[in-house]
Amino acid sequence: MPIDDAQRSRQAQQVTLVAMATNLTLTVFQLIVGLFSNAFSLVADAMHTLSDLLTDGLVLLAARKGADPADANHPYGHDRIETVVSMFLGLVLVVVGCGFLWSAGVRIQGADALPPLHPIALWMALGTLVAKEALFRFTLAASRRLDSRMLEANAWHARTDAASSLVVAIGIGGGLLGYRFVEPLAAALVGFMILRMGVMLAAAAIRELVDTAVSEEVVNKIRDTIAATPGARGVHDLRTRRMAHRILCDAHVLVDPRISVSEGHAIAEAVRLRVCRQHANVQDVLVHIDAEDDLDVPVIPVGPMPDRQTLAGWLPGLLGDETPAPKRMLVHHLGGRVELELFFPLDWLSTDGRVAQLNARLKAHLPTHPEIRAVRLHGLVAQ
Image 1 (cartoon, rainbow, N blue to C red):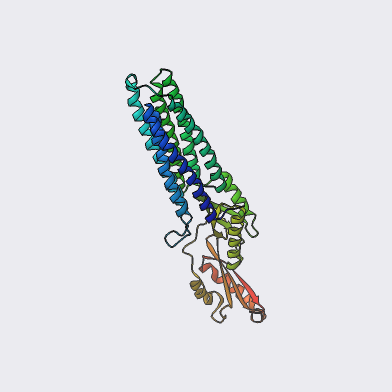
Image 2: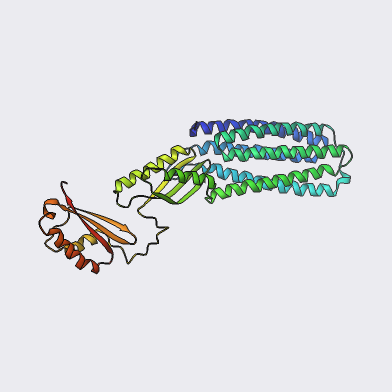
């Protein structure tokens, strides 16, 4: 069952508050234990957890702001705030990862002079590992339920923390066994893992910000939905882009070239509603109605296409000055040329010889207007 924006925002905020409480508790204990036990890797992990706490605050802000309704300055809503925050989270991870690599490299060079470790550091690292893994699973489940890339980014942030805590525990264990260089080496590995995850998250957010299309599988499903709409003869130029958890589409839909404008609009609206109902993540579909497939049939106009007023001015020369103005005139722009449908009162058009006379005049004068491919005459019973 789809979740409305208000409920989605509220649940995202609740998940983020749990993460903030967890990270605040871990930061305090990691920092105290790390300083007491001379475990640089644990202090580094504490700083990593502190960065989580700060970014959790940004996620909370984005979850609240992203749920705001569309306004004049943001006609598509505020969903991309989530994307920007996801990118920022990735960049924070990149900076933190580089900092760990640098600091760990310095400590590895002076490993022989490092003070001894206290065993409590190992227990703190293991406890952090359990807490971070639990937080990862909790947040990832929520991100999938709410289809939130921002929460997913935060979940994987927690997973990198869990992995880094595992490496820290191994490094501290090695240091306790007498291999002192192993502990700063563990910090370096943590830095690399964080750096890699940051690059991946930032790259994913940037792809969304530059309007990268959704997966081919999703595009094909949307295409099939459009093609199955009554009145739609084909679809091309289907384009998609993401806005956080939502998808925006635009497509060219081929219809019968001789239907009315109102029927074409009705088909376009049917396409939009059908796609939005069958694909919960699709927020809107912009439909361009095509009278012909301009991809398969290259259109090379014979010249500038005349407008309705110009065509109406040509009619006396084509049909004769004595011919009254038609009651209705339909103009079809097809294949780079114009086709006209003219409607006259049936009693006037059915006069003996009238159709033959008009037909003869059209055959004689149409060559002077190469823009016009054909003219069809219709008798109007009632208007």
